[in-house]
Amino acid sequence: MRILVVGGGGREHALIKKLSENRSIDKIYALPGNGGIAYLAECVPIAATDIDKIAAFAAEKSIDFVVVAPDDPLVLGLVDRLNDLGIPSFGPDKRAAIIEGSKVFSKELMRTYGIPSAKYRVFSDADAAIDYIKAEGTYPTVIKADGLALGKGVIIAVDFDEAVAAVKSILSDKAFGKSGDRIVVEEFLRGPEVSVLSFTDGKTVVPMISSMDHKRAGNGDTGLNTGGMGTIAPNPYYTEDIADRCMREIFMPTIEAMNKEGRTFKGCLYFGLMLTNDGPKVIEYNCRFGDPEAQVVLALLKTDLFDIMQAVISVRLADIKIEYSDGAACCLCVTSGGYPGAYKKGLPIAITPANGTDVFFCHAGTALKSGKLVTSGGRVLGVVSVADTLRTAVAKSYKYVKNVSFEGMYYRDDIGKKALKLKK
Ligand code: AMP
Ligand code: GLY
Image (cartoon, rainbow, N blue to C red; front, side, top):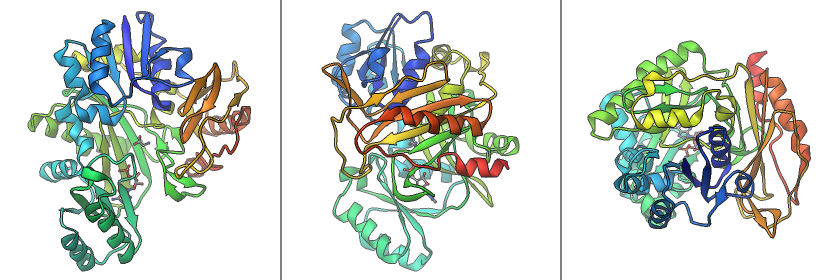
């Protein structure tokens, strides 16, 4: 089997590590991959968004199976292109990926099918949006660009002036280009957040072990939003009762709604949930594995990932049993100084291996330059630890982060702290 994984972040490193455990896979290509992935796969410098080149590469190399990991190629229709070539691919087609590609679509889907979510209105006119925000008069209020915006399209405005600035920057100044032709103005929800990734073949939905992301750059959830500064799994807020309720009120209804819309979703559907006083509500859907959620979820997954992915594609998910380790996992993200703002690239990285410790350095923004490892992105790597308890997993990530060093490196001091407090 020759497989190809599209993407080059920490999530893709975690996916490739897991896939490489499958004995039937002889060769893995990563497009474009990164400095850590290069030890497990052949990295080819084709951008994850260049769907023409990716399709041509897959055909030329007689690839047997493709995993499309990031949102943009899914939303652009890479899976449709590969399917046209007869190449089995894991990930939703373009019609289904719209669940992440358009927030207006996902909000309308939830409203039509009674799936709990925040109250909202859609606008394409800045003045109309501002009039509505003024009339509502409740802050914070949430303003979202309709389309993909590199994780920056959600603005939580704490007062009227911030809300006006957000509306104008998206609708008038086109800060996110066409992704901001429409906005969603949404009620601010309160409560602990839970990420639940799921496998679905359009008939069956199998939630993976729950996790908790830490999105803000600073300790105590302060500072700017990032792609994610660290994760833990399982999420202690996500009890069995809540899981049952989510299955009944959110997960199955979403799968059925997509089927009714003629947009059957096959792949990994990510439910971003807020556990409010009125019950669990959807904050967002993603059409792919979360990053850095995948790092902790896959670290605990015991079942062969490739078997699961093949079952998804052939609509046999109900036939397989998916199991996780009993313990817990932590991914502590190490970033370039300055991230999510401007930061330097190309800085040499030193890593002392942590052999035999159940610690895995999951590379994200790293590259090999003349055989030497250097930084190449904002999130540089994640220190992923597995242990019997969450406390030990978190402690291990903080111990072994000391094995990593590069100029200006930064990480939060409190990944897992909120979850551990609840456990006391
Ligand atoms: P997203 O980019 O859609 O993942 O949103 C980024 C973050 O904004 C989420 O993880 C939440 O923390 C926050 N957020 C989004 N929508 C809401 C909402 N309606 N109420 C409160 N927080 C929200
Ligand atoms: N960690 C959040 C995301 O992948 O969207």
